[in-house]
Image (cartoon, rainbow over all chains, first blue to last red; front, side):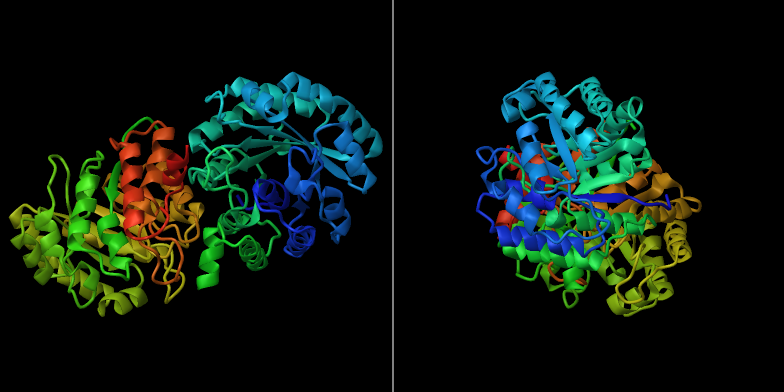
Amino acid sequence: MTDFVRMVEVGPRDGLQNEKAPIATADKIALIDRLSQTGLRTIEATSFVSPKWVPQLADAAEVFTGIQRAAGVAYPVLVPNETGYDRALAVGVQEVAVFTAASEAFNRKNTNAGIDESIDRFRPVLARAAADGVKVRGYVSTVLGCPYQGDVAVADVVRVARQLHDLGCYEISLGDTIGVGTPLKARAMLQAVASEVPVSSLAVHFHDTYGQALANILSCLEEGVRVVDSAVSGAGGCPYAKGASGNVASEDVVYMLHGMGIATGVDLEKLSETGRWLAALLGRETGSKAGKAMAAT
Amino acid sequence: MTDFVRMVEVGPRDGLQNEKAPIATADKIALIDRLSQTGLRTIEATSFVSPKWVPQLADAAEVFTGIQRAAGVAYPVLVPNETGYDRALAVGVQEVAVFTAASEAFNRKNTNAGIDESIDRFRPVLARAAADGVKVRGYVSTVLGCPYQGDVAVADVVRVARQLHDLGCYEISLGDTIGVGTPLKARAMLQAVASEVPVSSLAVHFHDTYGQALANILSCLEEGVRVVDSAVSGAGGCPYAKGASGNVASEDVVYMLHGMGIATGVDLEKLSETGRWLAALLGRETGSKAGKAMAAT
């Protein structure tokens, strides 16, 4: 496996959106600017969902216009619909992400719409994005379990992933939103999706709620996945298991990949420093074990 | 992989020996007695090393005689030499473990003896154990890196593991003492050892210092290992990286194995409760992500 994995840093969006205490716009900008200096190629900057849903990210436009965009780095943002797309486009966004669940129950609770309805809302976004030359990433959440319906059929994951790909998403990120997956289930899910969507268009997005994220990523790397979502310092937490761990920590993923001879372009020292800086800002220990060990040795 | 993994619980020994604050003998006994009710088949109870080296385990005899030994559960103890063996035998121990490093530098720092000298000390222990009907497990530490010499040659790991096996150790536990390993290195090391010692006589012992333990275990399971060392609540810490994580948490390993359809005989709920009980006793959060998530949901 001597090759390259593109890390998609989701800390500023998926990490921070789960923080209860308000975070200053300047701090969000500082986080992204620090991440831009680490060698990451993709940094998800914020979300243009309604501030009613995610008050923490109500300053999306200010954040996006405040950051220093580095050459060669993509800064995608989440958009739930055309309104979000309009807001994003107005501030110069060049890549957006749309999202739906593989679990009907989760999608209804989370977005007040069925999966098909969500996908219908994306059609005009994808059509406009194509015309505007804006890249679109697609997220499928709850791919290995749902806090409301429990098990999620692999066939549902495949169907939704394929629909997003057919609609024009250049990459589909498969998310274990509640972190319940284990390696063989992750592998089986991935194989099923890869039978309908080229594996080169797939990314994995694991939460470390049960400590399984790195093992699951390893399984998916073995199946050929070369794009991994993660959050510096393991930011995020889990809204469905209060106090539990959040996104897999970027530092731990990069440590593993480099140890396996897989390049990421990321400077692990700088990334770990940024993780500890963020943890200090949030008033806690870093959620990255590698980040903690690197500070100690 | 629908089969069985034997979990070797090392929390009472490898976990507690790294605790700075003294722990009451009664609490150590309570920990082992709780673990005995979880379905674990092997619980490393304590260590009969010199109290000068490990003051925390100076009460080894009291602990061993105080526990309620459950039917079908083995309670091995560490012995560094014949003196330790005598002390262990005097209180009715039926299984012991001997230990050496694969790194010459580590072994000298840690035991004030070269590897060959350590192995010579074990010869009479193994001879007497054979005569006494006492089983002997062998530990090889620093198999993927050493805090003093850095890299450790795989050939050194193979040589030491083979020597311990040839001497009569029924099982060799391969330990990544400082938790620096990553999956491909773990796999390569294991394959090399398995070419000289049957994989059915090998166990793996990972520390989670850099968050890699579960991914490394997965790699080794794929190579056929079916014995995994771990510590409830991820007890232990790392004396070479202050503040870093300790042993891989038993709860997280069991969660992964059960999710992969591999039986362990362990009741994960009871194990997680015991992990949280231990963490509360030590005045901290549980070091098991699964344990934390299970408490929260």
